[in-house]
Image 1 (cartoon, helix red, strand yellow):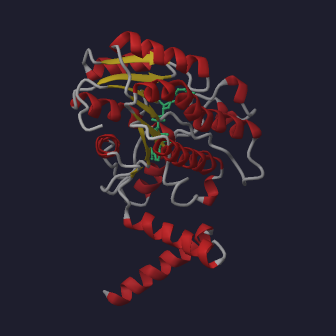
Image 2 (cartoon, protein in one colour; image 1 turned 135 degrees about the vertical axis):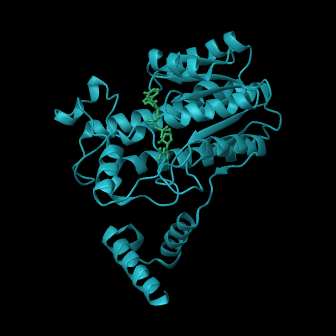
Image 3 (cartoon, helix red, strand yellow; image 1 turned 90 degrees about the vertical axis):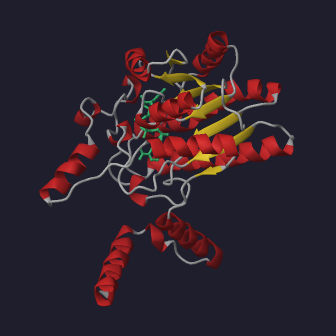
Length: 309
Ligand SMILES: NC(=O)c1ccc[n+]([C@@H]2O[C@H](COP(=O)([O-])OP(=O)(O)OC[C@H]3O[C@@H](n4cnc5c(N)ncnc54)[C@H](O)[C@@H]3O)[C@@H](O)[C@H]2O)c1
């Protein structure tokens, strides 16, 4: 979709870090934006801050298909059209232990939001886009679920790899039927070194009662970014934050230029991808998954570097 001016987009997870920046970037392109998230008060604060009549916030729970159909209809009532759906809402459950020990409620909650939430968004919006034969679908996955899984993080990459495969199937089917509707997979990252400081670091936030685990962390989730910054400060280091606008730029470029892989394809990610596919192709063990091996490789690289200096 080359000309985004006056086009209408819906962004789920719209009061979270990346969702807000995507909304801001869309407004800058002259688009009209519906930000959708769990809590109306948070959305109201975001739209007040964006300060544009072209941005509205509607409360929705992406695990509820009927609510997403109502969101589509409200968008059509509000702006008279709908062209782009960004299925971006997700949670990190903060699961504990090994992959066979994670609480079933961590699995159920993550699958319900991160996978079914995207499917609900696709089922609610894509028939409308296909019928008008114009539009774009962006599904937010993660490098951790597209390039290779970080083994210690278990549940999250399982859900994100489902989003990756789902979006590949979607793209293929839209092309096979000759639709002008297209799809992109957003893999948030930034060419600027640093972390993407968003709510996802506070794993377990917004956990609905039905997914409680009888764990004190359920009511008081840990802020992993604050902990990380504290540890870094104790070691005399500073944690830098990459601009979230880099992720939004990627999303907008994907829609405008019809890029499927919305990613910066950073060197270290491409290296991991090569290692993963070499392992598959040559039937060798997936050693890239073993963090002890990774640390040993890093240490070796540092030693080599010292030798070169
Ligand atoms: N921040 C990162 O480092 C990073 C990296 C890779 C991928 N991502 C992905 O980017 C996307 C945006 O995440 P973020 O980093 O901005 O985190 P975030 O926590 O700030 O935003 C996620 C938003 O989703 C909302 N949400 C959760 N459950 C919902 C539900 N049931 N219905 C509606 N909304 C719901 C939350 O309220 C939150 O506002 C997610 O898909 C995440 O997995 C983030």
